[in-house]
Length: 436
Picture 1 (cartoon, helix red, strand yellow):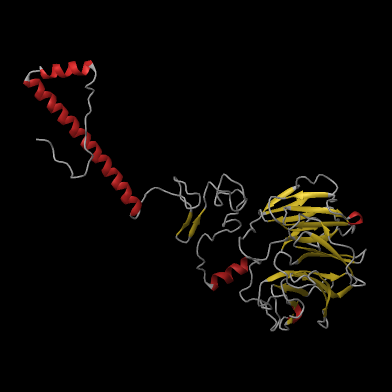
Picture 2 (picture 1 turned 60 degrees about the vertical axis):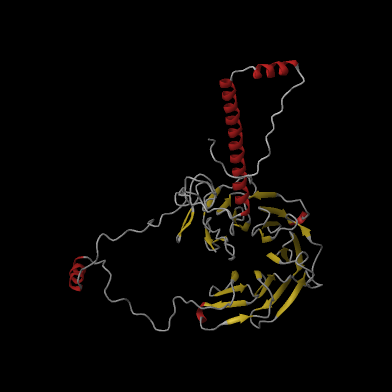
């Protein structure tokens, strides 16, 4: 008895034979003359062959039905116990957030030095948390009597009672002047107690260390981010400021009165593609010019005496990129240093200032936050870039293709914060710099 199969509609199987040929007729004659036992064997073989064909077709139809159900229905959820990286999606290691701890991916560049082959925890430039810290060998359980006996033997032991402190004399203070993020700082050139700060709202704050309780904030200078500030070399009571509203202001610090020197958006808001914002700024005392650059890579010059714009805008960096820093050489003011978002810091000669006529181009791997000449000699350059590098270029008249020294410093915060800038220390003659 043949095996039972699923009831499905199958096409009728028809076996066609060749009856016109002589061979087929002869075979039929032979088949007719076969004995009954052989005829039964042939019939069984034919039945088995037909059953096998039917089973194969049933299996194929079942596979097609299962595939159609998978397409129509929901995909089953599979749970894998393999280690899969959440960053590069590869197996064999784990990376990403594991609870509140972030694990670096070894297939990605190091977050500190931006170089592949290792993680931040194993970075050779990383300073360990224990560096410079000596743990106490045991807990101090001595009594005051032991301290007195030790003081009689050792004269260098500090006294128990601290020195008398004069009341109302402040050594340090934390006072909030601004309601928004601080974007720039500038020290007073002659008064060491005064520090000026600008914020994201366009306000100007005056910090006096001797009068920490007196709060002085000018909020009517700019309507947008205050990006840069410079004092007038001839008058330390006058301050020039550049803002993202496209204006340069001249402010009298005693009265707080401000006037606009230049507006690069005279027609007002015409869209984000045409709005110009001013970032880098410096003053050339020999020529009496205020130099300022915008977010389209152009340089503008304003006469300090007449408070008017001189000449046309000059393209000094790649078109459409911000120029975030400008500085004139303190020894040779005709040399101008600029830096921007096109990954370059450039040196220019102001006697021949044209597009594409830079004296030297200092390449960087990422955006350059700042670039400064050394204050005493003017022959060295200090640059800060977003690749966590602080670079020092030894001589502006030597080889400027590669820096003389690179310092790895973690300042790529990947947040909307004020960019980190390293500056030279103006009080020290030798080449030292401070962080800002």
